[in-house]
Length: 373
Ligand SMILES: Nc1ncnc2c1ncn2[C@@H]1O[C@H](COP(=O)(O)OP(=O)(O)OP(=O)(O)O)[C@@H](O)[C@H]1O
Ligand SMILES: [Mg+2]
View (cartoon, rainbow, N blue to C red):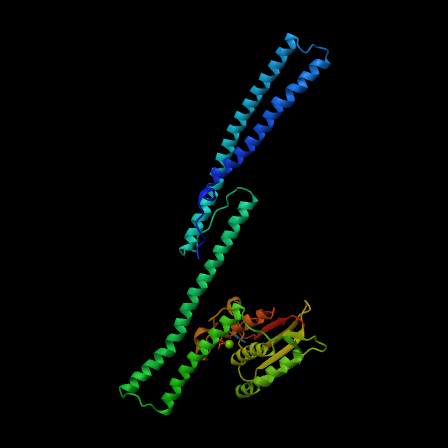
């Protein structure tokens, strides 16, 4: 609902308001000065004349009093005129400068409203308050621009991810319809795999959106870090054995409990371990560690002796759809959302998720830090 458009004085411009304000001050000043000049001043003057020993009705006294009155009136008149002119000038200058700054701000806001997220306002050089306003506006515009950029990229990525399986399914169905391809067990498996890939993509997108929007219901309770490590190892045992990768655990003694949703944290560790297994060749080792972080938080890390990650990829790994080795990672079934989901889940627990790697061939370590219970 749009608010009602104000009418009457509420519609007055800045110049009108400023002049009205200054006019009020001048009227109050003039009334006070006039009252003092006509009522108090002459009486005081008269009393001093009498005290000085002059006669009340003396011609000189009457003249002097008359002169005092007209001098007072003249001084008052000039002062009022000068004050009036000065306030007019001041309000005009101020109105022009403030009006100019506000006009550029509202023009920028209007541009922003039409989707031009690159619009910014220059510093108005009108003092701290105006600079703060301009800076707040520019920050808001920059955030909107980032959001817009992310949205555009996300849509492109989703379209890209959906295209391949849908194209495969369509091609196979057409081939079956044309009698070129039999609907044998292998074809059904292939079609089902593609459908599963689409289902997983939509599940992952829903998960990351829910986690990032912050309306994820977390059932947080104190949990021993060692229990989380044991559960993650148990869940990965079969897959590690299949790949010929060794699993190890290293839990420090006397760790405090962490305040987490056990199932969500298991999801994070499962994702990290799945990545580690996928990027570690047979004979390699994946180690889960629980230790005390320097800031009193508890650190859970997943370390592998696998491929490692080149430094230029490290800052981007937690972005949605980012894959370091696009072709190979996609072939291995990854859509690049896993780490974005992990990060959103860890942030929902007021924790952090980071990665270190000495580079290709050097293995990598993903570390979750969590506040203690
Ligand atoms: N342990 C690791 N060693 C080397 N590279 C890794 C490791 N973990 C993640 N990566 C790199 O980070 C990228 C992003 O990981 P992420 O889990 O977000 O996506 P994914 O595993 O490719 O797909 P998804 O998890 O959505 O199935 C991976 O594609 C891979 O290139
Ligand atoms: Mg993954």
